[in-house]
Length: 183
Image (cartoon, rainbow, N blue to C red):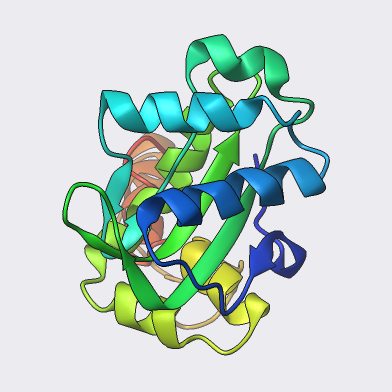
């Protein structure tokens, strides 16, 4: 699983239009050693197919399947545009999460980002974030820490057998947000 680090984030970027923003994203991926210069063409070709606007002022440009040969290592670069950039589909973005993926790893990256769509104010918070760590934290799903306290400990539960107790435990973990529905 990909972990977003503060060093993956560039703050205070400026671009007059989406093309320039995408050029900066391509250059950032290349400078990080993730892509060859030719990956830039794949970013633009993918954007010509359909917009990579994700929602909440975030775009997720990535290359085409044909451009994967120009990916040297899977990774992302995040570019923050505090003043915003009008994306080619008319949406205003404040953050580009530029993705370089050698296969379908970008789908995992996209899944990791979908939690930001639940927060309507994340776009303005990303635009105003003053540090790379703050941007990374806003885009990263919060890690759930294990804990044992009165909220998680349930003594004397009236279970008739071990399976009922396990089911009740799983339900409790789900209610506390420690596990997802697939648990």
